[in-house]
Amino acid sequence: MKLLLLFMCLLTFSCNTGQTGNVDKPKVYSDTSSLFCKGTPLFVFNESIDKLGSRASFYKDTVNRQGGCYSYLIVDTFFTVRQSTGTMIGNLLIETNNLRQIQRVRGYWEISVQMNDKTRQEAIDSIRQRFFPNMPQNFLLTEADTTRHKSFVEEFKFFPSPDSGDIDHGYVPHWSFYYDAKRSKNGL
Image 1 (tube, helix red, strand yellow):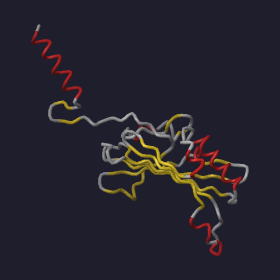
Image 2 (image 1 turned 90 degrees about the horizontal axis):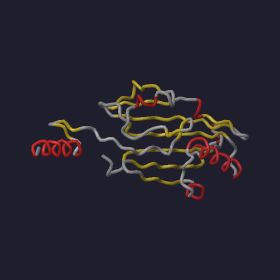
Image 3 (image 1 turned 120 degrees about the horizontal axis):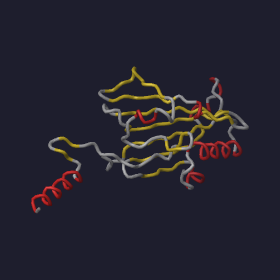
Image 4 (image 1 turned 120 degrees about the vertical axis):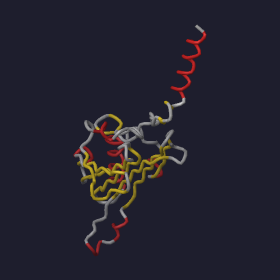
């Protein structure tokens, strides 16, 4: 009986340390993104890219592969929003490791509207309602914010596009929104 109890304790201890023999099990984080797609968080850091299959259409970038890592481009009509004053078009780039686990997500939205306070507010409202329903309130005041999770950091930036001042070369002034989710320094 004592031997059985000792065996159960050892088994429990080995399962809790995340090791089985000499092979380390990959750690799984439950941190979900603030970025929503079709009503649910788009990704969980370190989950397989394959779990996105039903949430968004994505394509493997076979040209820009670096080492054992892969990049995937999300081109989904969900990330395009028609506003009363113009259009917001977004793209996402997801970087994975060689196990196809999500390591970084970057998003960029071009908002083709005239730059004034009304269009600024409409764009921010569209971003919050459609993509980031849990966006920090501070973002409305500063137009830039950072949210820290257990294993990753999300950065949000809303700004006039840097090329907006170059009207002589055909650039039309517009707003831009940038999203970057990457591993935190303490995220494993």
